Length: 383
Image (cartoon, rainbow, N blue to C red; front, side, top):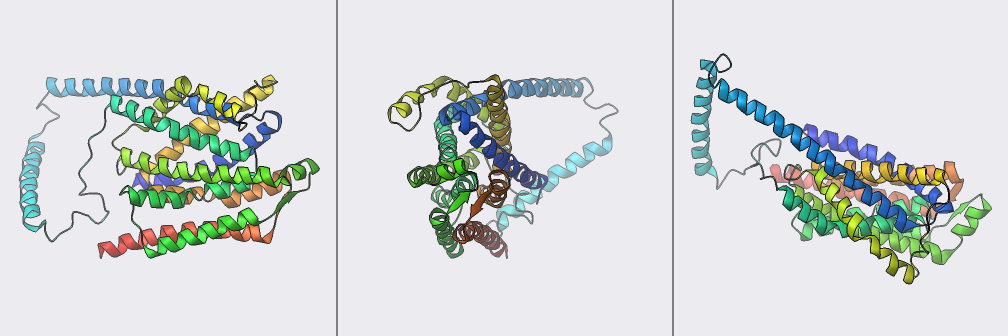
């Protein structure tokens, strides 16, 4: 387990806390400003700030790299280039030739996998800025749809219900990954699918209620809750597809692409090309008529939530995906289920039926089964 994998796990823990907090804030915003499209558009568009950050970082790196090359040319073999270093280089060259000969001799019988699984893997060629921009423009609509469906679900149901349904994205990630050659399927993972889907059905049938009468009247609207559940599942599907595509494009450890640039271009495309979607959404009745926030305080809350809940957390999430695996990252996101339930209990005084709680547990157990089966299959393959 390298430092990237460990850092990815830490980022997953941070994203879990940020996402639940942001979901609670977003649902609070919808009490006075029920505009899922506006909140989504603002949050996704704000990611454009990553473009200047990425280009400034590139300028600094190129400047330091040029200085390093200039120093090497000015003193190619001075005090900084002792004879022992030259001997080590020559010895390393001979060792590489011997290694290539041994590899050719044994390539039919010895797998190209080292003990840590990545030492013998050939580094993938980084993509150019133009290719990153092109890919960002392709996946920006998918990411916007994922974020909008999640916010639309929050506007129609509880944070806990939205979290449970969104956590089923791990199952879609598994199947889409297998279809695109990014993951594999086995019996244990199929069992995990049925366990988790049964849990989702139980949370949908389970009841929730709040002590606040206003909250009670909102939660008792079954049609509204059903639409929210549907949006949550659709968000999980698009989230799973985006996760697999992100990993496939980024490489095994994210070495092929600058994630900051990618999300910056997603923000730029959203800003200039997706604003018009408010018209068909309003005309179809999915989105209410567009209005601006009524107070400066609400403006500040919406913008701050966009920066923290979208710009920062989405970037952390993307790094966790490319530094670990799509399945591990999605499994980590399922930790939002118990945290969201506790948050709803403490903040809204919401109560949950035994069927709902058992269904939530089953969703999490399904993810655990899928993750354990994946790890065991990898270990068995190395024996």
